Amino acid sequence: MDYVNNVGMHKFDPEMTESILEYVSKRLALTETPLDGILDVSQLPKLLEGLVAESGIGFEKALKLYDEKISQMVISADSPRYFAFIPAAPTKASLLFDAVISAASLQGISWLEAAGAIVAENQVLSYLANRAEMPETAAGTFVSGGTSANLAALTVARDVMRAQRGFGRRSNVEVMVSDQAHSSITSALNILDIDAYVVPTESYKLNQANLQKALDKHPEPNRVIAVVATGGTTNAGYIDDLVGVGNFTKANNLWFHLDAAYGGAVLLSDSAKNLLAGISNVDSFIVDPHKWLFAPFDCAAVIYRNPELAKKVHTQKASYLEVLHDQDEFNPSDYANHLTRRARGLAFWFSLITYGAKNYQSAIDASIDLADRVRVEISSRKDLKILNDSELPIIIFEKLGWHDQDYQNWAEKLLQEQIAFVAPTTFNGKRVARLVFLHPATTLEMALAALPKPL
Ligand SMILES: *Cc1c(COP(=O)(O)O)cnc(C)c1O
Image (cartoon, rainbow, N blue to C red; front, side, top):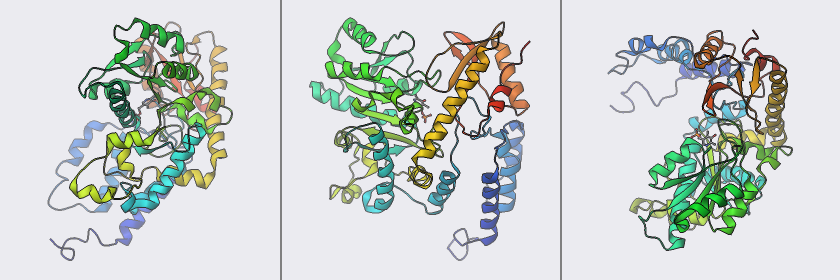
């Protein structure tokens, strides 16, 4: 097969381009993205049977299959009626520019290949570090998600602290984590072969006192190398006492990592930023722009106070890569466990400079305000009871008299009727209801429609 004889896979096809751009345009024009996700997926294998074959079916049939079947079997994370897990609400500019990044095959591996993209990505990373009041020299990279970002930072914490304490490469070390920490922390520590030293919290928050109490009880405190704090627990929205954690890590010479995958977005809000007071003392932190910073999937930032430490740990060495390190230039590939990477931070960058930070601030504040108004409504109902009192726009509540199955039925019915996508959770050992507000287009009416009906 050569360029001339194949079907023209690399030749411009005006009809295909027009069809796909038209589809994209139609999708972007939706003011309220439908939830979808209710078409029965069990018919799909039959529909796809034999499609990966010697001969292609052409873009018309392929696109139709996606539009009419596949996309209908996916719940739209960017629907303003999506209140489960952590929703998404990418801006129009970020979605469009993501298409540009794809069309340009833009990678962001090394300075040699992609200096322009890297300067722009680093501009937003610096902006985030600056909002966190970290030193000018703080830097990092964008990876696929909070899970990868936490792993990248904790790898650096492990290697740096082991070396600093004079421990060997395979020696046992432990990391203090709260009983509320995200599952990705457990996963990262597992990969790193490090034990978590779980610290019990009062009212769901780590603070200096509960950390000190736990460390005092540790049989070998010298083995403890780091603390992972959470800047917004994913289930309930609680933010650890970061000032207290910082005092503790400083007094005990521990690495301070902050997982702010979700809540880190408040850095952009002048009124809510103080919820993360103390973030300036971290050694590393992460935030997912694909969550509450309105960037497309997949985009997570990992930022180090001292990026040189991360570079020593993560730089890959190979003869064919030596040319990348001839000069001391900034290679994003050196700051996490990745090499080839899409310039995924650019969609966020484009949107941020297009709309300006004030618009981000009001979009973030809007969901905090909405959650406050929904809380008032729930509190006024005798049959409902709010169970969390956290700072972020997540509401956990129960309906008196409901059992596990009732919550399940509630969720299923709302999706079936395309009123809302909700997912029950477990809080204090009980199955309960949970609503997360993130999309600026979510109205009070949409939110209230998701509440269980009064008796
Ligand atoms: C979402 C989340 C993660 C995981 O991020 P992914 O992007 O889903 O990998 C980690 N920590 C916290 C606190 C989160 O909210």
